[in-house]
Image (cartoon, rainbow, N blue to C red; front, side, top):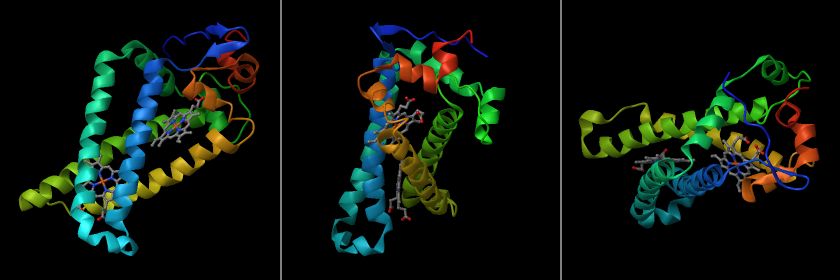
Length: 209
Ligand code: HEM
Ligand code: HEM
């Protein structure tokens, strides 16, 4: 396990949850995801076929959004706080015994990220890579039939459904569920109440307990 950064106080009673870089990564990814989802659904759903004459336009927006998404993320990695991203990734990778217990429904103390959040990060990254690879082959296959892969469309579609399910759960916890929705402050303003953090992520703010 890598070093777990200690909770830093930002103002009395508040601790820093996310650096600016982490928040920019989150909102860049979320914005691109919503644009890709909306345009992807138009390409997918026959009921939106009134748009058919505009299909080419929608497709171009879909593809250019994907390009912008990749460029923006690379740019954030290049100019942003890579150390913060690396440290967070190390925490995410380290699924300990408490996390495994938590995942099977047991009670266990959680670190800065709970086990569900760790799994959410891992799935989000894996899905993004698979979206990009299958999307790239969809694009390439249209230009050169040698690269037309039978699996690309089903994979791309399955990823959309899987990530929609994940997103519904994510949004419920982020904006509705009373005990977790305070997290919204962390991903927007960067800090959260210390007492909330102690309760939700006790191994993060009380590392020696
Ligand atoms: C790097 C990311 C992505 C790339 C490069 C990409 C690329 C593409 C391409 C080239 C197509 C084929 C367009 C056509 O010929 O009709 C397509 C279709 C589609 N994309 Fe994406 N895409 C990406 C991400 C996403 C995401 C995040 C979603 C949804 C959450 C999504 C949903 C869809 C859907 C539903 C279709 C229609 C597939 C069908 O006809 O069944 N894509 N995408
Ligand atoms: C309006 C839309 C969204 C809201 C309000 C939102 C809210 C949040 C919040 C509050 C957190 C921080 C949780 C914590 O304290 O650790 C977070 C983290 C995260 N979000 Fe979002 N999010 C949105 C969209 C998305 C989208 C579209 C994706 C991916 C497709 C995504 C992926 C993630 C991931 C991977 C994390 C870190 C792990 C986790 O906390 O689950 N988010 N989001």
